Amino acid sequence: MIQVILMVCSISSRAAPPKATKGCLLTCIIETLSILGFMIDITEDSHVHTNLCHHARGEMEEYVQAAIERGLRRLVFLEHLEADITYFESTWLTDDDFDYYHEEGQRLKGKYRENIEIALGVEVGYNPKGKEELLKRLSRHSWDRVGLSYHFLETGNGHLNMVSRKQENIDALDQFGVEKVICMYYGGLRQAVEDIPGNLLCHLDAVLRHHPSIQFTDEHERLIDDLLDAVARKNMAVEVNTSGYRLKNEPFPSRFFLNKAIKRGIPLVAGSDAHRPEDVGRYFDRLPGLVKNLG
Image 1 (cartoon, rainbow, N blue to C red):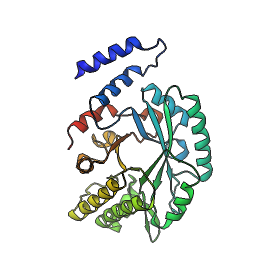
Image 2 (cartoon, rainbow, N blue to C red; image 1 turned 180 degrees about the vertical axis):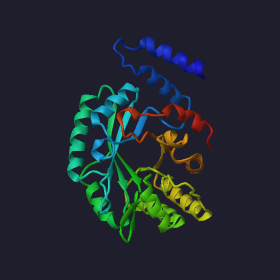
Image 3 (tube, rainbow, N blue to C red; image 1 turned 90 degrees about the horizontal axis):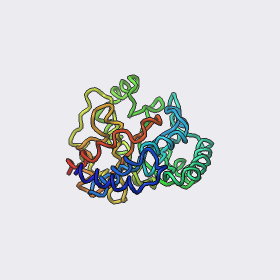
Image 4 (cartoon, rainbow, N blue to C red; image 1 turned 135 degrees about the vertical axis):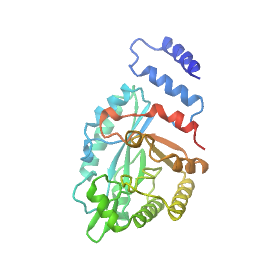
């Protein structure tokens, strides 16, 4: 197969204009891999953040430039939207932030239209009590992609972040009850699929990701199956988040979850979850081998 890729790229490079971008060879390789039948389009990074969310760094344009440098065909910004959350820090955008986000996104679409396709998306963090506010804020703009996630669990004393690596969150969730938290997480994601008009499910296995001894029970697996059945009925995709390779040497979600998605015919979408420009498209070269061994 490597010989086929090199042959195609050799032909392509001879036909390329003298001022072709540095990423043209990578573009050729990943497009050839796609032609050869892999199930994940690794010419598109479908999940990047920027400094607008307060826990990433880098301007939107820096992410675009990084994606072009890596030879990507398409870049999807997927910034955080939350509603009615009581938490000690803000990790999401305000309405004013989203106004700027769309204004700057349109400028970048025009400036780089010859180099890359840019899409403006939103990662909606579900909140059962904030559904109407989420829908209202979503309606203020049009979106190229709507991802669904669920970060914050309501307690009697504000919210806890179910996907945090901070020890205070992990300890508090431990006290709340690990099995209960997991059930509420998948129940919340399942309701999000029904309530929010999304087309991508993010962070399928993020609940208590950093807990040292998390285990999924038969009840949890039943909830996961029910969630994925709903995702399939809604014609949504499931994200393959390559940030997992840095933490656990495998993507998020793990093969256990991805096999369930594939058996339901759910499309898989690659996202780096980049919080720095240099992380755009990270570990995408591992995805063809991953998909080959799934199912």
